[in-house]
Length: 139
Image (cartoon, rainbow, N blue to C red):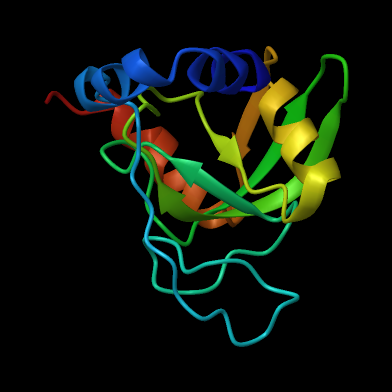
């Protein structure tokens, strides 16, 4: 993120054209937050919580589902999260974006985070067993 931002600032005449042609570029609107300890509203309709809210591919994962994220890299994240948002560039079963919060430190962490990791959907044992047994059925 930091590299992209630096390029956009260094090339203001080209920046708008790049933003308008990049499907992953998201335009935000400003709204009052209310409780400043919480983030903006996610797709689930609730405020995002720093280091606990996850954006997922909602074609695969249900919003509201709990996930354990284990991502290594320069700044590892191992956290219990809830799928509360979606993202246009989040595609696939093991993809997600963690909401890091506000401020320069959160921006730095979020911008630098691109790590291989694991995403675990947390389900009650009975439900997991039922879903697992459905694999034997033909589609």
